[in-house]
Image 1 (cartoon, helix red, strand yellow):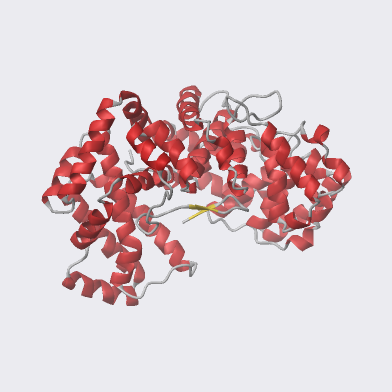
Image 2 (image 1 turned 135 degrees about the vertical axis):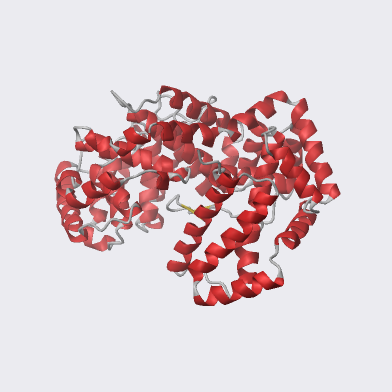
Length: 505
């Protein structure tokens, strides 16, 4: 069992705690001084950062893992956190997205946010009475990392939780999401690794696509052996380089699943062969549909996403031919028959292709109006007469965020529904016999919703998190604040790209 928090699910919680605690700045100052390496260690690290960066990272990780273990943190949670940390930093340095002048620069930019994250996550464990949390808090206090005034604030908030049993139970359940998901998947490790034994190529690859994305969400994909999948993707490209009928976000294109998995697993595939396939597919789509973006939105979306993922030039594929911008093709009668997620995706495709500002404003407004019509008293429905789903919720939240309209969703407590869906679908999920990959899709989009809600970092979404997880005093402080803000340098933060929806750190 890997005991490490999913930081994608905790960013919003940590931001709320940072905002709520009056003495958090004093804590950061004391903690940063306590964890700063001694002069002798700094000299050794300064030498390594210039000569052998990988060895430098290993030394840094070992140094801090020992520090945290002495404070009472479990070895397995620290090892997991720092192994992920090493992979992340190595990737950034390899891609030239990060550079560090010396060990202190690295400490200030990289290590201190990780330290704050680990300790604040342990504070959450303390609130819900996890077995090791109290002893860690005592050790932090004894070492002087927790100033007296900050410890008083923590204990006062713990008292509020103990008086509000509903919020405490919500926080406990939220705090356990990663454990229940990871346990479910690790118990079925063998079945997941041998999904290639399924008879139908599309069935196995689509399942593995959703499974891999869920595993990646919780940073546990490296615990699984995907050798069989890697061999299949590399050697049997003709079996997965296919377009399927009846495409949807729950039934993704087979070729897209292959491209995504191959890219994620760093598998070398024949890029020219895929390019030729996409060019032929373009002609098939043009022949089949009069206005593809409306008639089969997901087919166009996966086509565009694949070109983007392979870093190909959009101009070579004449994607604009998929999009007829005649206003009459986007009337309300036509749009009301589309799914909510598809309406958002059409707008997203416009932005991905850089044509959004050139589209007739009446088309944009019709799409936006129809999306607004999907917001009901109970939540966000997938179709005019449909049900609420994690998929529709995710795309609608993204739409309202991009258009600065999150205020429209202030009445909906969809966080409770998301958490409920994760637990319910996990109970129904089986990895043998008739596998229902709609359940995998629902879990995936529920996780994506958690990531999205936690990463927005604004007052509206923070209030939703607070109303579900925190006592009323915390909710009131956020609600009454004229300037809901927190120091963005104190934690490792994820951000939302308003075009892609991709989250960057």
